[in-house]
Length: 246
Image 1 (cartoon, one colour):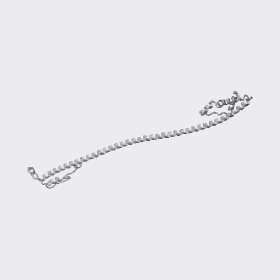
Image 2 (spheres, rainbow, N blue to C red; image 1 turned 90 degrees about the horizontal axis):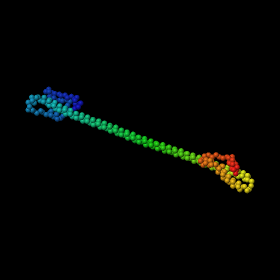
Image 3 (tube, rainbow, N blue to C red; image 1 turned 180 degrees about the vertical axis):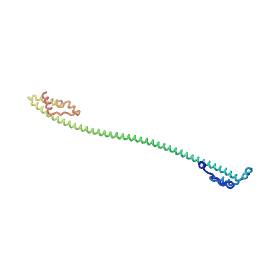
């Protein structure tokens, strides 16, 4: 009967003949009550005849009560065992559910971490690509700026070269005219005039190639380096040297 059955008190009440009439604390089944109501059959044994009817009923009642108590105890033990089995099954199911929940949470956590790592790597690659794109754009703008600057400088250099060529050509023509006038005054006769003109043409050609545009100046002009501008004194000196050679 378990713990409750072991502490249960059973009391009996008897009449003046010591026959048990009331049993307190025990629930009797209907079959026991019916058997108790039935009259006892006469027995042919001498011992049963010598016993009193009250003693026989008392012993039979005690025996039946003991049987009922044993059955009740067995039933309660079975119910207690069944409850323990159910509790153990519920505990096992609960623990198994907790284990599955922990495994599921751990798997979800690992999966979440892997997804976050993948997203972080993807975001890092995207940021790198954006940085490289910005760097390329800045480099392209810088190259375009340099290209525009160089084109502007080249245009200015070409303009200055054209102006310088124009000025030097005018100065050369003026110096050549002065030299030609001096040669014409120096000539005494009409016969030498033709020879002087031929020599004058040769002098002009040599003067334009060597005296006025030396090799170094032409090379500097082609390489884009600054050319020293010749003054009128330098041109006059070149014309004097040419006149002395003639």
